[in-house]
Image (cartoon, rainbow, N blue to C red; front, side):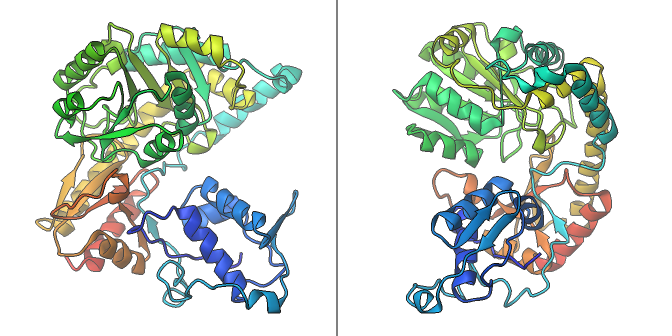
Length: 471
């Protein structure tokens, strides 16, 4: 595979796909990447760089659109030949700009340890069971799998999700209230169409930046609401004119706090008084390490104003791309009247495989196993931080989920912390990108995900960060 190694600049608001596109374009213009060179596949490059395949896809599409590359079906993406006398007239990106200056200082760069929050433990996924159930679907369903399925998703799977949510999260719903979709972002777009854009939407600040981006792309007026130790601040929410609020009460992203029952009831009261809607993203709810689970907002709601969202990306694997919405009865009626024209986005094969996986008890057993495994990794991470960084950092959000925040008190900026770790071949991630507006914290905070790392990698990674950050 040819070397494609941009250095990500997290201090800017430039999306990663733009940084990647500019890097490859510049390498083509200056001749580092030669004509007719085959670019790495989206999957391989995404794995190598530790970013999503969608990011690679968008960058590649832009390069193709501008004529720098050509996509050959079932073969790959190739660099096109452009006459040298034409290339010399193109404005070059500064080769020494920090967005593209990677190979000069990191000729042999290979990430040793990646603290990415979206990663999960792939080694413990039950591949043989999933393969067996997939084959079972193929043999039993055959031609039925080739037909277009129900717009809301396979009824059998929706029935199992309904049972699972009631047992695990106290969510009260029928299969008719559930809509299955390929990922949270797709379902957020669907919600924007359902709820409309006549009034502002409130979001947690900081909050999940990909959801915020979708809202903005859909033309929604966003009101960022500050958070405290219990989650979104209700007084600030009351001061806004929002009638819809998006929250992550089971594991606030990125701070990690769990919204207590008192704050949940306050939020439900606000929603009822406003006659609005709460979008409850039950992010990371399966993995709580201390205390008893708090019931979902949807399970506490009596006014039918809570829209519940969930996904199997963390409990299984991200590539399955099965997420779901639970709509209140009044919204499901509106969906069926106006939006059933939109076809289902998840393959019937994956849906039917997951249905059997749930029905035969594999999902519950797998989640219990992973909860134990992640708890052990979580303990090792906290222990390593205490051992190697005690007094120099503060841990935030350590009760649940697959990441923590580390407030680092060594005088470095967020960008300096990320770059110094990068030089030691360790990837860590910023929190500043999750703020709607620029905020100045006394100390920078770094996001450390641990789900995809081994126990040895976790301890080794903290030791390397201690050296990189001169702690």
